[in-house]
Length: 135
Image (tube, rainbow, N blue to C red; front, side, top):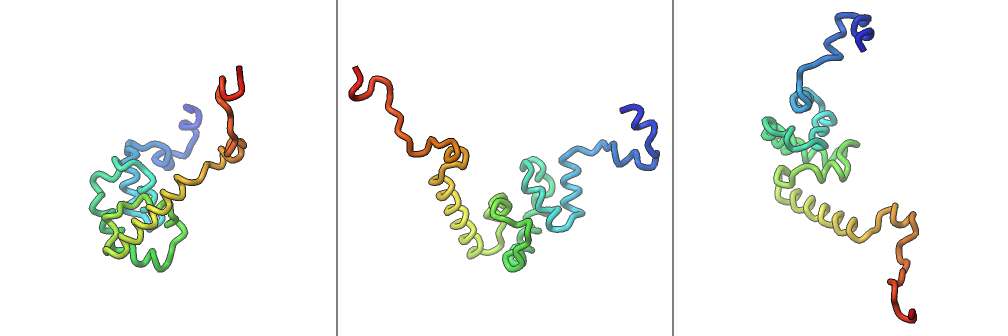
């Protein structure tokens, strides 16, 4: 590691070392980034939101309607589910999103995981020891 830092061009050292915390970096990225970059903060702990929560809420409220029309690639079902319902700007959209999330939860509760299906244990009845007909 020492050899690396001794041999790199000094003007690039700042790209390898930073005293900025992860929280600060992600908040900076949110403030300076485009919609895709800003959306990344929803994938992180809500601890990172502290200090920019009002900016995040305002950004969602100003852009939600446009996103529903344009359907950007980064705004998939998982990303929508990370956005707090109360940040969605109007009651109709909040209701639709609540219903959508509720139906997704019901579907995920009913379906077994692919791992369970692949393992072949689904629907198999395994008698308990000492069951009927055993002496």
